[in-house]
Image 1: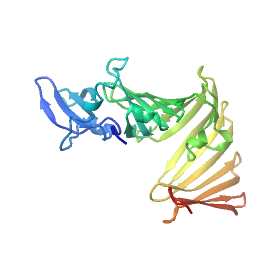
Image 2: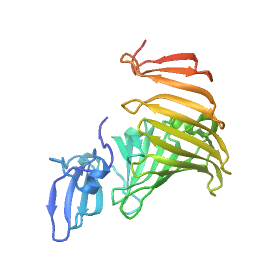
Image 3: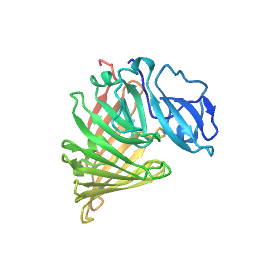
Image 4: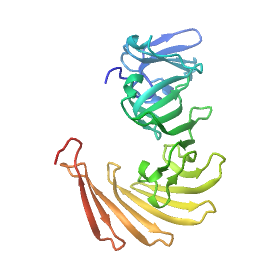
Length: 294
């Protein structure tokens, strides 16, 4: 794809000293943490899209400006809000605040994509997921403190969805339905993993919520109604590469209802096994690698 404007705002450097500030230039394919730390790279092609970051003498980030590629300067419209810029990407990871595989605005029209609004501090403010037909399916609203850290974010849904289809590890099909206008509020740990999710409407009427507990290779997810009644739970076991290998679902009394196991052979994307309440395999499905006609 042309006009590659990848990932998050963080940077690569060529520095210029000024009496009261330090200016550094970063490419667009680095994690935002590198910008906050001012971590440099060897060189930046200023003819291509890049970021200009200004730091206080103390090293604290003062502002950040997106500079489009030479060929894109006359095509890109100015943002309505001063200090904000709209960018387009194929992938978005809210855990690390990374936007990956950048697109031009024209390219984005042909792909399901993420439309991101970034402020002058290099922080993601909003991220829309836009389907191939141009309709916004849901919107991430990021919340930041004065130190550029996030402990919470919201996702507003614009159509009926199932949270378990968005994240099979966190959510159960038994309790994951959301309607247009509903919001899922994520409260996250310092490492970016969710510790709880509340599902509510725009008036913040709570419908249900999740709580999560983590160990080295295991996740426990519990789900409750608004009055804190336990509905059920599931556990997720991971391999060394942090890929799920087993998800087991339990009722409110802790009795297993069913389970799903995942294998990752070299000649296929994965093998998915469905197990019943007696832990017996009732179905196995081989999912081929992308492009494999078998």
